[in-house]
Each structure stands twice: as structure tokens, then as C-alpha cells.
Length: 244
Image (cartoon, rainbow, N blue to C red; front, side, top):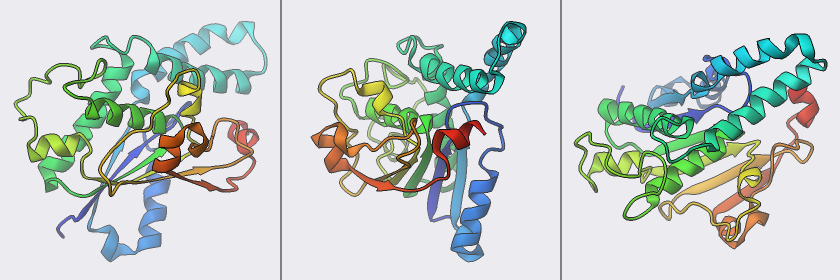
């Protein structure tokens, strides 16, 4: 059956298995029904393999010297993810660039399989910051100062072509973020500007007021207030549930 929609999913922070997306995709399949689901082309961006091997090694070195293992592991894996992805963003071999290349690779797969489909992105936790940074960099003219959109990719895709526009997320119709922690990355900056995107882009941000790592986005600035719809939810027990 021909695909009519693409769904791109990004994982969040912390110790994350490669098959993290199985439960989400199965739930969506049940909700929309088989006939609809068969027309959706799904891809997941898994960027944890850029980080977790080193994190596991460091945690192993620390185990004999520390207590509160569960909390410490959560903090090491989670905040190390955030710190490493923001460190040396201008370097071509940085986790920031490697993660953007993984997003690009998945978008190229979609384009090669089905062309410039309308796109939905679902991003959990740190994934919201990751996809926001990707889109922000892709929008910069004439080019971004950091990341893969700084300079030429050298892969023969012409600027302004259908392929180029697709992987710059010009066909992005919906962005859903859950447990988003963008405020942790931008609160010290002024001005705070939201991503642009095409006029039809709708960004819905789900947050739980009990989750200290999940934030509303509209209060950040007028541009966020205009771009994002915040939806409060009860996801369980917030951070306590995350650590359980």
C-alpha cells in the first residue's frame, strides 16, 4: 500500500533501549486501525548509541565509590546526554552533529522510499530539544553556525530541491513533544526565539506539572506563545515515576 504520511520518532534522555519505540508504534497502530497505519511510513531516530557506551563505562568505574545507585544512574545518563549534545557543537565529530546526521539519514530513507511526504514528529524529553535544534539550524540563511547545516553536506542534493526541502523539515505538519526540557537549554539566553517552520506547522507540547524535567513552553517568550500549544496531562507520578 502506498505511503501517504511519514512519522519520525525521537527518544528522550537516559538509559534507553534500541527498541524503545515498539510500544508507541503498537499503541498507535491499535488506535488508528490497520488500514490507516499501513499508509504511515515510520522511522525512529536512536541517538543513544553515540553516548551510552561511554556512560556505562564511566558508571561502572564509579559503582564501588557511590550510593543511591538508581538516582545517580538516572542523573549521569540523563544529564550527561544533555551536556554532551551541547558540547563542541561546531565540531563535525561532536555528538551534536552525529545526532543531526542520524536525523538526516532517517529523513533521507523516507524520501528515497516514498518522496516528500507530509511529516509528523513525535519527540520525548530531550528529543524535543534535539529536533528543535535541527530545525532551527536547517532554517538559518545562508547557513547555520553549528551542526550539519554549517557548510555544504557535499552529497549532491541541490539547495531548494524537493529532497533538500524535505530534509530541512519543510513538509513538517505536526510536532508533538512530551516531557520537553527545552527551557533548561534556553532560559539563560535572550532573546528566546521559537523555531519557525511553515505556517501549517502545529506544535503541541504535553507536560505534567509534577514532572520537573517536563515544562510548558508558551511562557518562554512571545514567539513560543504563538508557535506552541501547551497541553497539561497527568502522566503518572512525574519524576518519581521516572526514577521508579
